[in-house]
Image (cartoon, rainbow, N blue to C red; front, side):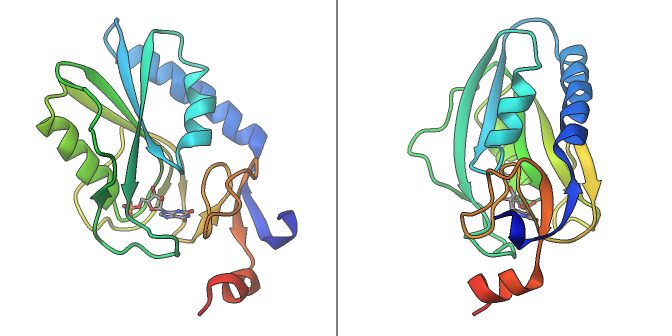
Length: 183
Ligand code: XMP
């Protein structure tokens, strides 16, 4: 797996240090009391596990399956909610976790749905945000790192289902993209 990586963009130590800061900001900003955390699967799993262990307050964890990428390196523009039931968020303060803010469509669609479902307040945290214009107007309240507009893998992020368990954020070799998914 490691041999498929062109370069490491953000290493594990740097990520862990940044998560300390994000967790402290989240604890500071949310009113005291329980919090519902919604994790967008599967990309935000690793980020969520490491971030939430740093947040010292009662939290309920829910996961949401949305499809916006369909396995390739470009967004298809449509966001599908794949779960039969939406988590109960009425009257709750919600923290939404996603791996990366790219076009913004995913975060925008999920935040809109959370408000429709009656959440009292919604804040969002992403590990990464691409430095590019968004297709929709949305921003995350907590951003781990701003990165350039390139496709990245690792730390939860995949390419065709692979590389999620790399402990760092990296850029794939062009030859790997051409070989595995370049049809
Ligand atoms: P949007 O465009 O809706 O995208 O903001 C959010 C979702 O798209 C996926 N995504 C990526 N996945 N490397 C990945 O592995 C990337 O560089 C990348 N850019 C977007 C991701 O699932 C994210 O939740």
